[in-house]
Length: 351
Image (cartoon, rainbow, N blue to C red; front, side, top):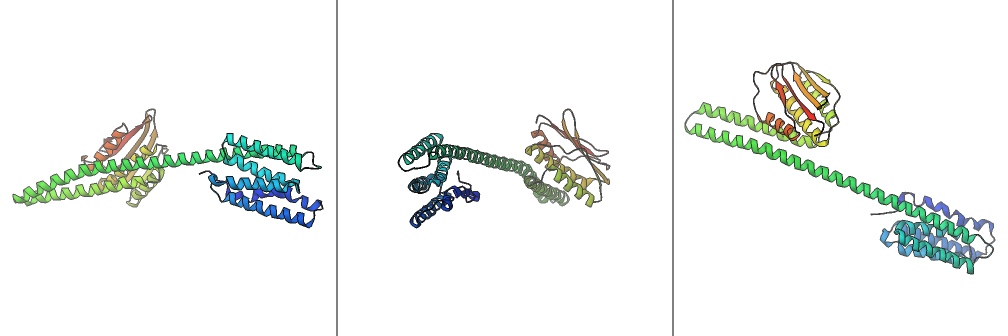
């Protein structure tokens, strides 16, 4: 909601110096001083009232400020500064048509005051009208500035909420895919183990139960990776984190190339894929050196994870399946070789 800038509201009162200045060079009577002080206190009360009011509730204090300024004008022509505050609030609170009507009414009020009460101040109307219009325009500009800021804030909040919703949907989709695939495998292995035990083939049943446990562990790992991808700190930070894990396990790590700037969707997918590839290195590699390579080509951003170990075969487990599914969603695929071990993919620039 449109609001006044309360932080600086009291600073703007410095403009009342033009109302207070005549106190010191005009010989007023004591009763005149009392009336002018009473008007000043009442004006400050209305000013405070406006500062604490919703924009839809500012009409009454604005009218009271105009009334106070009008009543004190015959005693103190410095009341022009009070009219300036009124014009600012009219410009700030109301739309352009209402602003024009309000300023016209304010100038008409100055004309009446000048005609009936002003003596010895030929420039009161000229200065007053010019000041009211100029300060009123400042109020309009401040209103436009605040409304623009509000729209930008709302747009940023909507974008943030939309991004969060999309990311939640992505996680739900990933979890659905992971758990659907994994639970199917678990049910199949459990049924086979049950049948083998009924046939007293205990060794085969134990083997299937062992594979069932492995599927469950891989599923748990993928679920953790998917959820952690929701909270990741960016590709650069995740590469540093994964490199640290490899070094802690005794690998010499070489990160080459510049980490690319990707969309949030691509970055999350790459983080999860790199996490799975590094996990595979930690579990299965017989080497001691790992290279994570980023390279920008004419076709896109290439990412490669390689090590100096050797794989005799590549098993199509849930981890590899998850990687291939994520890459398929980005219109690319995984490439690999076994000796030496190397996995790579290229993100198309148009993806």
